[in-house]
Length: 428
Image (cartoon, rainbow, N blue to C red; front, side):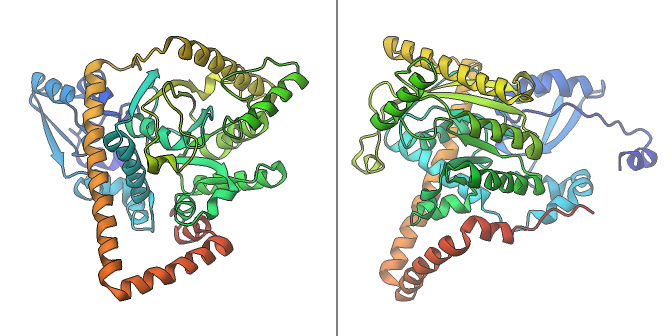
């Protein structure tokens, strides 16, 4: 295609830059270090780009004005139609966008949950470490300690800021898939449900990851190597395991189960081109929420601290299961040391690799997104309630949908149903 364009337009200059991290905080540096170097020296220069908010930032606009670059922003997420080069290159992918896909709906639901505990309940999220390596488009395995049953819910706040809610998938125990409403939504979101028995889980993991491979989709999978949340019973089992294997006993984390972790790393490398491992440590310095009912009573954490460490897959010993097991065990030892020091000094600094200006911009973008999700789902909920009260036919349909959903969840599974409804990419 490029050769054909050049033959018809000899003066045409085409440049290709490295893959861009689409977090808005990095756009200014990308514009200076990549775009301006690739652009022709004559001025002014016209830059035609997608008008999505993630593609435009204040530093980028300032650099464009200073360097006599005209930014022409097409309507958000329409360049696959309005920009002819994109039409020529991605017409096959455009057909796939018409397929039955719930990723956008699910991601706005996740954003609604973040809005609920950040904007309505006033939960303060503190993120430390280095988040600059996190990327919306990279395939990632996210490992995290598990002090409460709802750590995954609060981790949405990190993904909403620096990675992708659309790509986020979570490993959960299989019993949760059949919870009415919530469990069905988790199935539809294609979460990975495990029996915690290797004989059955291995086949399930391979099937799950190979499906994403067939869709050329890069998941960002959240996994809890500890296997269960931090309670008195699990704490005692971890202590017995440490004594049996001559390991140090931990006060703030459980010893990780290495078999599931090494298997996931190996299969994600094989099927999904795993790019990085994101090591997340979560701490609740003021109060801890252990039960789902605490969401209703308002007994939720006032402050949640996340420490992020990102590792490119090339820096992790993934070719040897023994070394990889030792690597994750070392990471958990580091978690224990960090948490022990954190709970002693309660350091709430928010140094995360970005400047104060960049973090402010990220927070402003996030607030707009969260407010939009909050308004959308609140209006939808109120409309649904209104229809249930005043329209008998809708109430009847709603009541009939409950047993239908139970049957689908039990017999087929919403995850399998949407897999069937999602066509494979056209490889011709």
